[in-house]
Length: 331
Image (cartoon, rainbow, N blue to C red; front, side, top):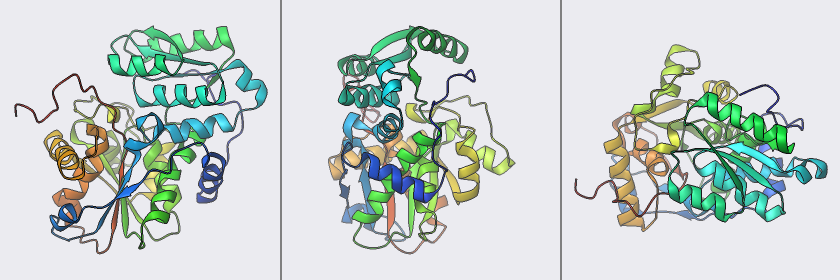
């Protein structure tokens, strides 16, 4: 992305205090999503950990992304808001920003790949955003967004690799920790671009909550980067979890490197199994990306850690195309 497409206001530092400030700013705008438990799912684990599921699939827009979008808008000046906001996204961030902008009466411009899923296009349009389509590749996305911003003067709100986005996403764990009736021993959040995981790690800083990431084995650039000690900019994403196909962001990776204990990779089969359990046992509409954290907790790698105590699981979203068969149908 070109250097001029940056949030125009100096963000707060990446600290837990800044996540607390972000939550104060958006508490009246976002849903305080419920936290669910399941005795049968907890009992199914070798460690019998009590599981607390933070249901961000029930957030406005159907995903945690509404938090970062709302906080990013709260950091803009009235003059900037008058010119509107813009972004690039094929999924949940597009809808989240469009809805957050609609709530404030702000014009929103979204660049979407021309192969985006029709339900997500319909959602963005339904929230009143103006869509410009581009070829499904990074150079086309960057060039189209630059043209939109040059024409409109709109402020760019990045989908994951920006301080305000990260701080907004971290507010989900603040709520989860407060809603759980006992202190959490650990929390697991999915990682694609890394905004949610980095924000979760910041929110957990100094609390004693151990933080883990969940990543598809078919898009494991973050896990590989941690092993290699450097951020991987390439990802040949081959996973059902379409929300986690993005390479981890440059701002997010150092936070994850410093504050996340491990990123656990899970296969698509494990993700689908976890997703089906959430639908069947908890009656929750969860997309594959949203089930990745539960899949990680069920994995041998996580269970061998021997964590004693309650585990928080962030269900990141529930947006999927219900006109198509669910992934376990016909298997």
